[in-house]
Image 1: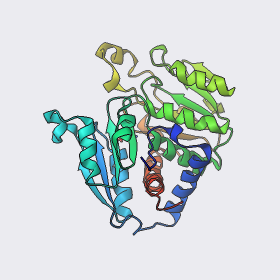
Image 2: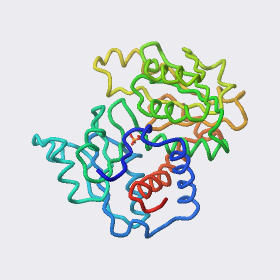
Image 3: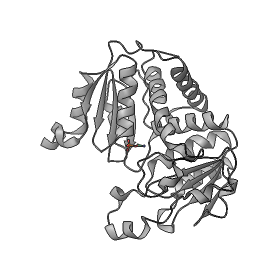
Image 4: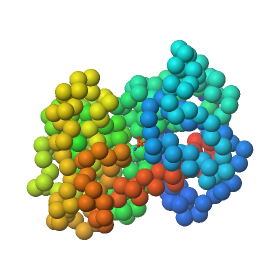
Amino acid sequence: MNHRNLVSINDFSKEEILRIVELAAEFENNPKPGLLNGKVIATLFFEPSTRTRLSFESAVNRLGGRIVGFTDASSSSTSKGESLKDTILTVNNYSDLIVMRHPLEGAALYASEVSSIPIVNAGDGANQHPTQTLLDLYSIKKTQGSLENMNIFLVGDLKYGRTVHSLLMAMSHFNATFNFISPPELRMPDEYKMHLDNLGLKYYEHSDFTDIISRADIVYMTRVQRERFSDPMEYEKVKNVYVLKKEMLENTKANMKVLHPLPRVNEISTDVDDSEKAYYFTQALNGVYTRQAIIASLLGLIK
Ligand code: CP
Protein backbone atom coordinates (compact mmCIF):
# COMPACT_ATOMS: atom_id res chain seq x y z
CA MET A 1 0.00 0.00 0.00
CA ASN A 2 1.44 3.34 -1.03
CA HIS A 3 -0.03 5.55 1.68
CA ARG A 4 0.56 6.55 5.29
CA ASN A 5 -1.68 5.53 8.19
CA LEU A 6 -1.87 6.74 11.76
CA VAL A 7 -2.52 3.60 13.78
CA SER A 8 -0.06 4.12 16.61
CA ILE A 9 1.76 7.23 17.76
CA ASN A 10 4.91 5.22 16.98
CA ASP A 11 4.03 5.51 13.28
CA PHE A 12 5.33 9.09 13.48
CA SER A 13 8.94 10.04 14.20
CA LYS A 14 9.76 12.86 16.60
CA GLU A 15 10.22 15.17 13.59
CA GLU A 16 6.85 14.15 12.14
CA ILE A 17 5.15 14.72 15.50
CA LEU A 18 6.69 18.18 15.68
CA ARG A 19 5.54 18.89 12.13
CA ILE A 20 1.92 17.99 13.01
CA VAL A 21 2.10 20.26 16.06
CA GLU A 22 3.45 23.07 13.86
CA LEU A 23 0.77 22.43 11.21
CA ALA A 24 -1.98 22.48 13.86
CA ALA A 25 -0.86 26.00 14.76
CA GLU A 26 -0.96 26.95 11.06
CA PHE A 27 -4.53 25.64 10.75
CA GLU A 28 -5.54 27.54 13.87
CA ASN A 29 -3.95 30.80 12.75
CA ASN A 30 -4.67 30.57 9.00
CA PRO A 31 -7.78 28.47 8.27
CA LYS A 32 -7.72 26.81 4.82
CA PRO A 33 -11.42 26.57 3.90
CA GLY A 34 -11.12 24.86 0.49
CA LEU A 35 -8.32 22.43 1.23
CA LEU A 36 -10.55 19.32 1.28
CA ASN A 37 -12.83 20.30 -1.62
CA GLY A 38 -13.82 17.11 -3.42
CA LYS A 39 -12.57 14.83 -0.63
CA VAL A 40 -14.76 12.41 1.31
CA ILE A 41 -13.74 11.28 4.79
CA ALA A 42 -15.38 8.23 6.39
CA THR A 43 -15.92 8.16 10.16
CA LEU A 44 -16.57 4.59 11.30
CA PHE A 45 -17.36 4.61 15.03
CA PHE A 46 -17.95 1.15 16.45
CA GLU A 47 -17.77 2.72 19.96
CA PRO A 48 -19.36 5.90 21.36
CA SER A 49 -17.60 9.25 21.01
CA THR A 50 -18.39 12.93 21.32
CA ARG A 51 -15.12 14.84 20.90
CA THR A 52 -13.16 12.61 18.58
CA ARG A 53 -15.91 12.10 16.04
CA LEU A 54 -17.33 15.60 16.17
CA SER A 55 -13.94 17.32 16.08
CA PHE A 56 -12.92 15.19 13.07
CA GLU A 57 -16.19 16.03 11.37
CA SER A 58 -15.89 19.71 12.25
CA ALA A 59 -12.29 19.67 11.00
CA VAL A 60 -13.37 18.19 7.64
CA ASN A 61 -16.40 20.45 7.25
CA ARG A 62 -14.33 23.56 7.96
CA LEU A 63 -11.89 22.50 5.21
CA GLY A 64 -14.68 21.99 2.64
CA GLY A 65 -14.65 18.18 2.68
CA ARG A 66 -17.60 15.79 3.01
CA ILE A 67 -18.28 13.14 5.66
CA VAL A 68 -19.85 9.68 5.39
CA GLY A 69 -19.99 7.12 8.15
CA PHE A 70 -21.81 5.68 11.12
CA THR A 71 -21.85 6.46 14.81
CA ASP A 72 -22.81 3.07 16.10
CA ALA A 73 -21.97 -0.45 14.91
CA SER A 74 -25.62 -1.44 15.39
CA SER A 75 -26.62 0.90 12.55
CA SER A 76 -24.10 -0.67 10.18
CA SER A 77 -24.04 -4.11 8.53
CA THR A 78 -21.62 -5.24 11.25
CA SER A 79 -24.83 -6.03 13.15
CA LYS A 80 -25.71 -8.52 10.37
CA GLY A 81 -22.38 -10.29 10.73
CA GLU A 82 -20.26 -8.39 8.20
CA SER A 83 -16.53 -8.71 8.89
CA LEU A 84 -14.31 -5.70 9.56
CA LYS A 85 -12.34 -6.54 6.41
CA ASP A 86 -15.47 -6.44 4.24
CA THR A 87 -16.56 -3.16 5.84
CA ILE A 88 -13.18 -1.55 5.18
CA LEU A 89 -12.99 -2.82 1.57
CA THR A 90 -16.48 -1.46 0.96
CA VAL A 91 -15.80 1.95 2.51
CA ASN A 92 -12.59 2.14 0.45
CA ASN A 93 -14.92 2.63 -2.54
CA TYR A 94 -16.69 5.58 -0.98
CA SER A 95 -14.00 7.71 0.64
CA ASP A 96 -10.44 9.02 0.58
CA LEU A 97 -9.51 8.37 4.23
CA ILE A 98 -11.08 6.39 7.08
CA VAL A 99 -11.22 7.49 10.71
CA MET A 100 -12.10 4.46 12.82
CA ARG A 101 -12.83 3.80 16.49
CA HIS A 102 -13.21 0.19 17.56
CA PRO A 103 -13.41 -1.63 20.91
CA LEU A 104 -10.82 -4.25 19.95
CA GLU A 105 -7.12 -3.61 20.42
CA GLY A 106 -5.40 -4.06 17.07
CA ALA A 107 -8.54 -3.40 14.99
CA ALA A 108 -7.04 -0.25 13.44
CA LEU A 109 -3.81 -2.06 12.58
CA TYR A 110 -5.80 -4.84 10.93
CA ALA A 111 -7.88 -2.29 9.00
CA SER A 112 -4.69 -0.59 7.81
CA GLU A 113 -3.40 -3.91 6.48
CA VAL A 114 -6.44 -4.44 4.23
CA SER A 115 -7.27 -0.83 3.31
CA SER A 116 -6.24 0.88 0.07
CA ILE A 117 -6.70 4.33 1.66
CA PRO A 118 -5.25 5.85 4.87
CA ILE A 119 -6.60 4.61 8.20
CA VAL A 120 -6.60 6.89 11.22
CA ASN A 121 -7.01 5.16 14.56
CA ALA A 122 -9.54 7.09 16.64
CA GLY A 123 -9.05 4.69 19.57
CA ASP A 124 -8.74 0.89 19.64
CA GLY A 125 -9.80 -0.63 22.94
CA ALA A 126 -7.30 0.10 25.73
CA ASN A 127 -4.43 0.26 23.26
CA GLN A 128 -3.81 3.65 21.58
CA HIS A 129 -5.45 6.97 20.74
CA PRO A 130 -2.79 8.70 18.65
CA THR A 131 -4.83 11.66 17.39
CA GLN A 132 -5.72 12.49 21.00
CA THR A 133 -2.02 12.43 21.78
CA LEU A 134 -1.17 14.82 18.98
CA LEU A 135 -3.79 17.30 20.21
CA ASP A 136 -2.45 16.82 23.74
CA LEU A 137 1.04 17.68 22.49
CA TYR A 138 -0.31 20.73 20.69
CA SER A 139 -2.01 21.76 23.94
CA ILE A 140 1.20 21.29 25.93
CA LYS A 141 3.26 23.21 23.37
CA LYS A 142 0.74 26.06 23.30
CA THR A 143 0.56 26.42 27.05
CA GLN A 144 4.15 25.65 28.05
CA GLY A 145 5.97 27.03 25.01
CA SER A 146 7.91 23.79 24.61
CA LEU A 147 7.50 20.03 24.77
CA GLU A 148 10.91 19.44 26.33
CA ASN A 149 11.67 18.50 29.95
CA MET A 150 8.07 18.49 31.24
CA ASN A 151 7.18 17.01 34.61
CA ILE A 152 3.95 15.29 33.71
CA PHE A 153 1.51 13.71 36.16
CA LEU A 154 -0.72 10.97 34.72
CA VAL A 155 -3.60 10.38 37.11
CA GLY A 156 -6.32 7.74 37.29
CA ASP A 157 -6.82 4.73 35.07
CA LEU A 158 -3.35 4.09 33.68
CA LYS A 159 -4.13 0.47 32.86
CA TYR A 160 -7.07 0.85 30.50
CA GLY A 161 -6.65 4.52 29.54
CA ARG A 162 -5.43 4.43 25.94
CA THR A 163 -4.76 8.18 25.91
CA VAL A 164 -2.06 7.89 28.58
CA HIS A 165 -0.39 5.03 26.73
CA SER A 166 -0.06 7.05 23.52
CA LEU A 167 0.92 10.19 25.44
CA LEU A 168 3.69 8.41 27.30
CA MET A 169 5.15 7.10 24.06
CA ALA A 170 5.07 10.54 22.45
CA MET A 171 6.41 12.48 25.45
CA SER A 172 9.27 10.01 25.75
CA HIS A 173 10.78 11.82 22.72
CA PHE A 174 11.01 15.00 24.79
CA ASN A 175 12.89 14.03 27.96
CA ALA A 176 9.76 14.09 30.11
CA THR A 177 9.69 12.97 33.74
CA PHE A 178 6.57 10.94 34.48
CA ASN A 179 4.64 10.64 37.73
CA PHE A 180 2.07 7.85 37.61
CA ILE A 181 -0.76 8.21 40.13
CA SER A 182 -3.15 5.28 40.21
CA PRO A 183 -4.62 2.65 42.51
CA PRO A 184 -2.66 -0.65 42.44
CA GLU A 185 -5.29 -2.28 40.20
CA LEU A 186 -4.90 0.39 37.50
CA ARG A 187 -1.13 0.83 37.30
CA MET A 188 0.69 1.73 34.10
CA PRO A 189 1.34 -1.59 32.27
CA ASP A 190 4.91 -2.91 32.46
CA GLU A 191 5.52 -2.63 28.72
CA TYR A 192 5.31 1.18 28.97
CA LYS A 193 7.58 1.32 32.02
CA MET A 194 10.07 -0.89 30.20
CA HIS A 195 10.00 1.55 27.28
CA LEU A 196 10.98 4.37 29.65
CA ASP A 197 13.63 2.18 31.32
CA ASN A 198 15.17 1.45 27.93
CA LEU A 199 15.39 5.18 27.20
CA GLY A 200 16.75 6.01 30.67
CA LEU A 201 13.76 8.27 31.40
CA LYS A 202 12.58 8.85 34.97
CA TYR A 203 9.21 7.77 36.26
CA TYR A 204 7.72 7.47 39.73
CA GLU A 205 4.62 5.63 40.94
CA HIS A 206 2.37 7.07 43.65
CA SER A 207 -0.95 6.24 45.25
CA ASP A 208 -1.78 9.93 45.92
CA PHE A 209 -0.66 13.29 44.52
CA THR A 210 -1.98 15.88 46.95
CA ASP A 211 1.46 16.49 48.50
CA ILE A 212 3.44 16.51 45.24
CA ILE A 213 1.17 18.34 42.78
CA SER A 214 3.26 21.52 43.27
CA ARG A 215 5.99 19.89 41.12
CA ALA A 216 3.78 19.31 38.07
CA ASP A 217 3.92 21.19 34.77
CA ILE A 218 0.98 19.18 33.44
CA VAL A 219 -1.61 17.23 35.44
CA TYR A 220 -3.29 14.85 33.02
CA MET A 221 -6.46 13.50 34.66
CA THR A 222 -8.25 10.44 33.27
CA ARG A 223 -11.59 8.74 33.75
CA VAL A 224 -11.74 5.21 35.15
CA GLN A 225 -12.75 3.27 32.03
CA ARG A 226 -15.88 1.49 33.25
CA GLU A 227 -16.48 -0.15 29.87
CA ARG A 228 -13.17 -2.07 30.06
CA PHE A 229 -13.92 -3.83 33.40
CA SER A 230 -15.21 -7.39 33.17
CA ASP A 231 -16.24 -7.32 36.86
CA PRO A 232 -18.51 -4.36 37.84
CA MET A 233 -17.48 -4.75 41.51
CA GLU A 234 -13.87 -4.04 40.57
CA TYR A 235 -15.02 -0.80 38.92
CA GLU A 236 -17.03 0.17 42.03
CA LYS A 237 -13.90 -0.18 44.18
CA VAL A 238 -11.84 2.31 42.18
CA LYS A 239 -14.32 4.64 40.49
CA ASN A 240 -13.99 7.49 43.02
CA VAL A 241 -10.35 7.10 43.87
CA TYR A 242 -9.11 10.51 42.67
CA VAL A 243 -11.02 13.77 42.53
CA LEU A 244 -9.08 16.93 41.66
CA LYS A 245 -10.50 19.82 43.70
CA LYS A 246 -9.91 23.54 43.28
CA GLU A 247 -8.07 23.91 46.60
CA MET A 248 -5.47 21.40 45.38
CA LEU A 249 -4.39 23.95 42.73
CA GLU A 250 -3.39 26.59 45.29
CA ASN A 251 0.32 25.83 45.50
CA THR A 252 0.85 24.63 41.97
CA LYS A 253 3.23 26.19 39.43
CA ALA A 254 1.93 29.44 37.91
CA ASN A 255 1.85 27.94 34.42
CA MET A 256 0.67 24.46 35.38
CA LYS A 257 -2.28 23.23 33.30
CA VAL A 258 -4.85 20.54 34.00
CA LEU A 259 -5.58 18.43 30.93
CA HIS A 260 -8.16 15.69 30.52
CA PRO A 261 -9.05 13.88 27.27
CA LEU A 262 -12.70 13.94 28.46
CA PRO A 263 -15.38 12.75 28.98
CA ARG A 264 -15.17 13.54 32.68
CA VAL A 265 -17.22 11.60 35.21
CA ASN A 266 -16.28 12.96 38.65
CA GLU A 267 -12.46 12.99 38.66
CA ILE A 268 -12.29 16.78 38.23
CA SER A 269 -14.57 18.72 40.51
CA THR A 270 -16.63 21.24 38.52
CA ASP A 271 -15.26 24.06 40.72
CA VAL A 272 -11.93 23.59 38.88
CA ASP A 273 -13.55 24.61 35.57
CA ASP A 274 -13.27 28.36 36.15
CA SER A 275 -9.62 28.14 37.21
CA GLU A 276 -7.09 29.54 34.74
CA LYS A 277 -5.29 26.21 35.18
CA ALA A 278 -8.21 24.23 33.73
CA TYR A 279 -7.42 23.70 30.06
CA TYR A 280 -9.51 20.66 29.09
CA PHE A 281 -12.20 22.39 27.04
CA THR A 282 -9.64 24.37 25.04
CA GLN A 283 -7.74 21.09 24.68
CA ALA A 284 -10.88 19.64 23.04
CA LEU A 285 -10.99 22.64 20.67
CA ASN A 286 -7.35 22.04 19.76
CA GLY A 287 -8.55 18.69 18.44
CA VAL A 288 -10.09 20.41 15.42
CA TYR A 289 -6.81 22.06 14.31
CA THR A 290 -4.72 18.99 15.07
CA ARG A 291 -7.05 16.68 13.17
CA GLN A 292 -7.03 19.06 10.21
CA ALA A 293 -3.24 18.81 10.27
CA ILE A 294 -3.35 14.99 10.44
CA ILE A 295 -5.83 14.58 7.57
CA ALA A 296 -4.06 17.12 5.34
CA SER A 297 -0.73 15.47 6.03
CA LEU A 298 -1.91 11.88 5.41
CA LEU A 299 -3.63 12.91 2.18
CA GLY A 300 -0.43 14.59 1.03
CA LEU A 301 -2.18 17.96 0.69
CA ILE A 302 0.40 19.75 2.76
CA LYS A 303 4.01 18.90 3.54
N1 CP B 1 -11.21 12.16 24.22
C1 CP B 1 -12.08 11.36 23.58
O1 CP B 1 -11.68 10.38 22.93
O2 CP B 1 -13.38 11.70 23.77
P1 CP B 1 -14.61 10.98 23.07
O3 CP B 1 -14.68 9.58 23.62
O4 CP B 1 -15.80 11.82 23.41
O5 CP B 1 -14.31 10.93 21.60
